[in-house]
Length: 77
Image (tube, rainbow, N blue to C red):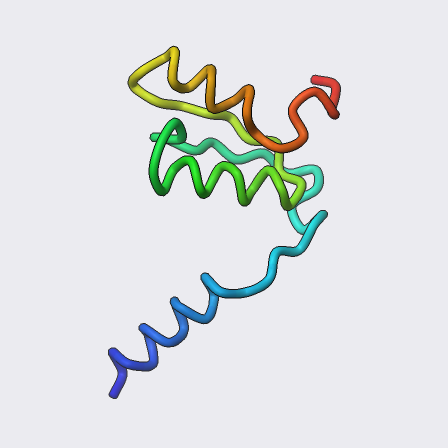
């Protein structure tokens, strides 16, 4: 069934091992990055070398999330 194939494909992609450096030199804007799926996405992207711009409705939470991302302070703007 097509829907089962799609589900397996999505789950398979989510379970792939992280690949450090996969996003080196790239920038991502993650909206809702202070909590939940947005936070998990921002962390994963940062661990894989991406420069992450954090956006959230709650500025204090966004600033805190940005400070906790892996690699913060390792790169120069």
